[in-house]
Image (cartoon, rainbow, N blue to C red):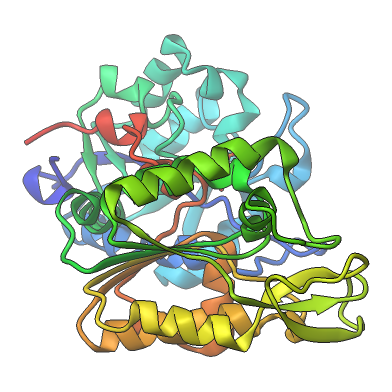
Length: 395
Ligand code: 3PG
C-alpha cells in the first residue's frame, strides 16, 4: 500500500480520516485517548512536511438529530493538548462553513471537522457526499484502521475523487496483523476469550486454519464444555451454538491444532463482586453455581501453552475481570503473553477488554502491538478483506 512517505505533502491540504471514536464519562470527559495518541506520528509528520491537516472522524452512532454528545467539539481541547497547538474547528464536515475553514487553513495548521455521521450519507457511502468531502483537500490520508470494516464515504467513497494513502497507524496495523496472519513465526498460539461464541466463531475458525495451538477461554468456553456434555451449572451458555462449537473442535482435530479449554474454574453463587466463590474442576460445577473465571490449574496450562511461542494473538478476556475476584485468569494470560514477548514472540492484542486487562497489570508496553480496532480487528482476524484497507492506493 502507498503511505504518506510515498507522496509529496508540501503545501498540500490533507483530508485525514482518523478514528477518534473514544469513550467518555457522563461529564463528557474522555476516559481513554489511546486512539488520539496513536495518530500523533501521522499528524506530526504531515505538519512537518508542510501540509495543512483536516481531521475527519465520527463519534458514536448519532442520528440526523445531531445529538450534542456526539459532537467532535468534545475532543477539541484534548487534540490541542496532544498536538501541542491550537486546533481549529468547523461546525460541519461539508458545506460553506467547512469549505471556508478548509480554504483558510495554512500549512502547519490543524482543522477538526464536525462528526461525519451527522450526515447519513457518510454511512451510505453516498458519492455526492464523498465528492464534497474530497473537495476540501488535495489528498486523502487514511489513518482510521478502526473503521476499516466499514465502507463509508470518508474512507472508501472519497478515494474515487482523491488519491488515498495510508498513515503510519494504518500501516502499522496492516503490517502487524496482516503480515502476521500471512506468514507467522511458529509456534503460533491464539488466545480467544469473551462471553459469546456467536461473536467469535469467525475468528476461532480462521485461527484454527493458521495456528498451532488455540486457547479458548472466557464465558464462551462453557458453551464448548456443555456441547461436550460437561455440567456447567448456571454459567453462560449458547445452546444454539453447540453444533458449531463441536464442528470447530472437529476441525481443529483434523488439522492437528491443539485446543486448550479450561480444566478448572472459579465459580460463584451469584453474578457480582461480593459473591461466594469456589474453585472446582471443570467436571464438578454444581447446578446452582456459575463460572466467572478460569482457575489456577488452567492459568498454569495457559502459561505452558504460551511458553516458547513465536507468535501470539490475544482477543477477549478469560473471565469477568471487571470484578477483582474474577480477574485472575485474565491477568495470568496478560502476564504469560508479556513473558512470551520478552522471550522473542511477536504479540498482538486486540479488543477493549484484553487491553483494559493489560493496562491493569501495567504490562501494556511489553506487547509488540496493541490494535486500536474493535470490530475492525475482529474482522481482520476472521480473515476478511477490509474495504477501508482495500480502498487505499497500491504502490
Ligand atoms: C469502533 O469504535 O470500533 C469504530 O470507531 C467503528 O465504529 P462503528 O462500529 O460505530 O462503525
